Length: 195
Image 1 (cartoon, rainbow, N blue to C red):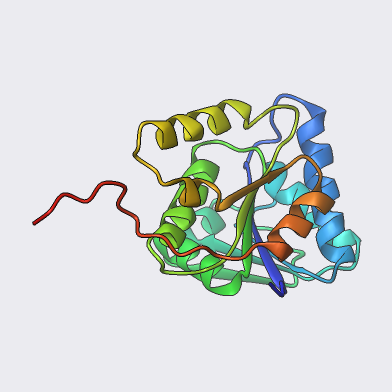
Image 2: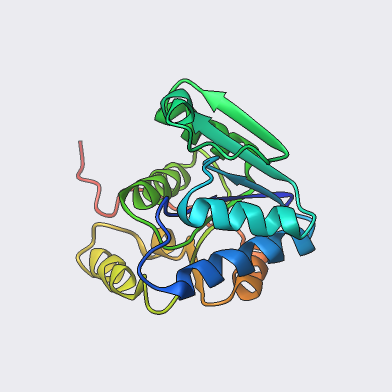
């Protein structure tokens, strides 16, 4: 798959450990070095600001999409290639998905997880055929991976849909996996009852 733009979901907080900041910096640098445009939530705070600054400092193009309410709270990044201000969170997610060829989640909180799971669900339902991945940093997502495997074992998620999520512990490996990913076609329903 040919990637031109990658959407990164991540925390508006820097997190408890400096390893999260280092991972965000490394991802931003790798995106720019590969000539990939960064699409993200438009913030200047937390890991959002770190990944954007790293990409910009490495000569990359960065597009931020921020809701008007957050822009008014003055957390929008003023130094981006482009900062689009939209009406709300739904418009933000739709616009990021429209611009991106792939999605990556860095460590983050509820918003990061919500964005990841929504775009994953869209892929599961066939609304897009774009790869998505987790950048595993210091075991941050290991328990989530276990829980996702549990969903498969309990027959709430098909193995093919679980495998849609690529996981790697380096930006280079994750970007390689996303570039090589090919969609598999499988119906959403695990056990569809007869009508």
